[in-house]
Image (tube, rainbow, N blue to C red; front, top):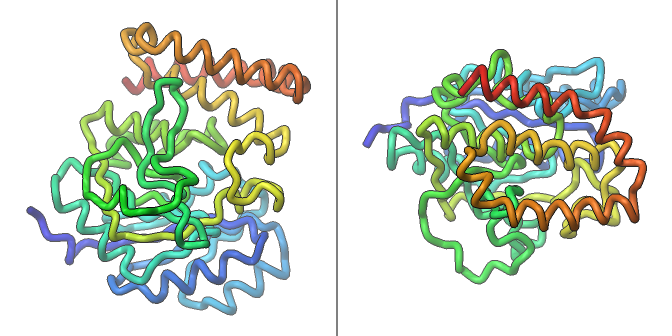
Length: 314
């Protein structure tokens, strides 16, 4: 197995400057037992006070201050383009890492040269509730976080191959990112927010890359800290707690993911599951959020774009 000790790690943190999360995130990075080559913060706060305060508090961190509030995919693409590391760790600012996270997670890349993604065990801030022990593709063709919202009782303490990594704490091999890049996008910028992690993982799997789970790499996450109202933090059923704009992305991005990545046999096999999910999902929209119907129709152009990307990059 190859040695990663001579490989560099870039860390990219995306922040909107809300919730007071960024400082704790950065402090947890500085305490890592394994060295990193750089920390890049993509600052979407559009807050002049925040823009001045945080770089002064963390002079060893490289800040990119965006003049507009970029979506998550655009932010990660910007950060990856600015970075130089052999491995890239992408984080929400509402994440803090155990001091051995990088050291333990890097070991996962050693098992196979085709491992392009590594997930650790991501817990909530209460340090007992599971946020994710790996991203999986459900029969409904939705993103499924394994162990989500369950108390950690040691069930997921085995190293193993999984499908993908959660977007809140994504560790990637740069070689893989470059290989599956779509034009200028590592993460598909049409996704904006939600499902970008599943799309990237699925594209990687289709290209022969694999993902590995290392339970000894521990991270702590405030579920929804960057997207939900305070009342919805850490709670399941995200669509109850996000605004109409994010709701629209949640709906369209599932379809984009399927169009870009699913095979015809896969569509036929999972059609009953997809139909049931859509029936429930659209019933909810018609009853509780009818305005989303118009928003979805305005997003039809993205579905056409997804089909073109599949034809171009497959």
